[in-house]
Length: 224
Length: 259
Image 1 (tube, each protein chain N blue to C red):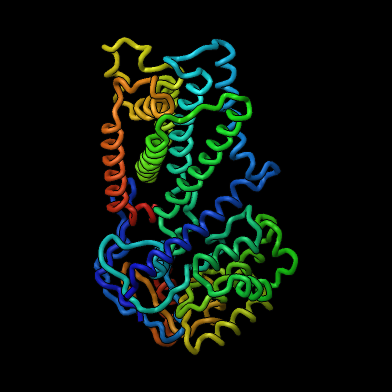
Image 2: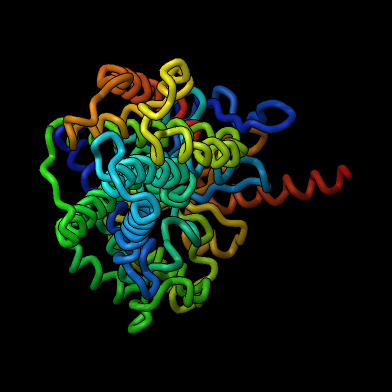
């Protein structure tokens, strides 16, 4: 469970601060694998980054006693000039893994990069990058994995592997995911949180959430 | 509850990782790390050397070669540190996604890296002086070392102030380069403060770098004198800058993250 207490978040702009959340109180469930759904600009990524504590709210707190991963997106923390191995070692170091050599080996095996692991990341395709980041994340023991469309560029085989390893971990770990591709969300998640107008709604059944989400979009379209 | 010791340990491992990353990414061309030492060394050595050929002799009892070297070292320490530290917050932006990486770690890493490079440059310069037979005995090594340390604390704090300001107002970067350019001429790098009439001193001595340079020369040669400059001013300015920069950082760092 992640508790959001009195959360207020705004971004400065030319027209004054743009509020995304105002005094939001919510208990974010983490027992299941949760998908965050919402329109563009509704605040999915903002909420996501605040959960990961890579950004902080203006007021209020995010309380949890779980070990959360960093928000795994395509580019996070990967330096294009450095090799895959150097990047892996960096991530291992700042996350205090017990043995960097072992971690390196596991990531190399999981990411299926073979010899290209020692090439600079700038020579990687976007799929290879996603694999590297995902492998780095999965091999650190977190309670909750935050995944932001990183799996969408991987090939089907890799996606299957990712799903299997997440399932393996789902005994003790949860996943929170942001994606626009519904079939991907169906692949990984079992429940949904919908962001609408600065408010959060939890749907324990993913299909119910997706229904509300897509109907909402249809309704708004027909109103136009 | 996370103990203080665990916090320090986490900090250390983040700064160490950032340090290695900075080394790997900054110097992965053909010249490698050597360029970092060689470039300031050649710059300082060549400029001092040619100046001493043009007008041989002493400046108030300090050999011109060494006089120039001390001034340029002070100037280079301040400007390169300022440049590197003040851009470090922006440079490491993608890394703040990891919540253990905070802007202050980037600042400290950049400052420490520049500091290590300059220490090696100083060692190279000392070696070069010894090899060409210009060696001399430092009159007050402790004063010299504390000046060097204070100069670095001052430069890193100044860099932090500029880095925070640039996060909110990007134009600060342009103003910064305009501000640092005249430093070469007003910081007593080429001339001694003693060369100016005493009534113009107030226009120069507001600049802490003047005090750093003049006192460093005094620390090397007692006969040079320390008229018009004071250690107290240096300490005061450094404490004020450190306090201001840390206070600014404390109230803004969460907002800096979302920019």
